[in-house]
Image (cartoon, rainbow, N blue to C red; front, side, top):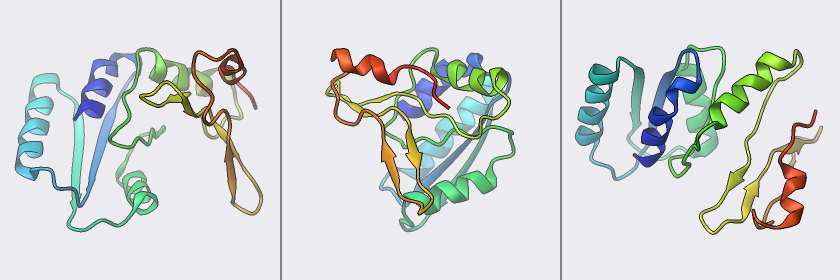
Length: 151
């Protein structure tokens, strides 16, 4: 729930937001989640879709399913352990406003131990990929190399 609460705290950074939550067969109490989401919809007038898989289908499949359910122009895909920081959504959104040829944007992901998980990446023609900055401590002088826009 921390991921969702962090998103709700920063929802004013975007002009319009729709939340699509997919439960990939977790052990969460589904009824408790449904009640929480109903309360959020009614209290804050936000758009939330919730779908629960009865068994895990894997990260890539669940993200594909989320993208099919979403109706907006922009899509932010997050795992449930991600906590969005103030300004992150606005920064990502502004890339699409400031540049004509942006197809995908990635934030700087920092792990709870302070090391960079990734700061974007590259997808090669064979569909393999590579992440920038992985494992570099956030307070390391090298981490500044991962805090700018590339294209």
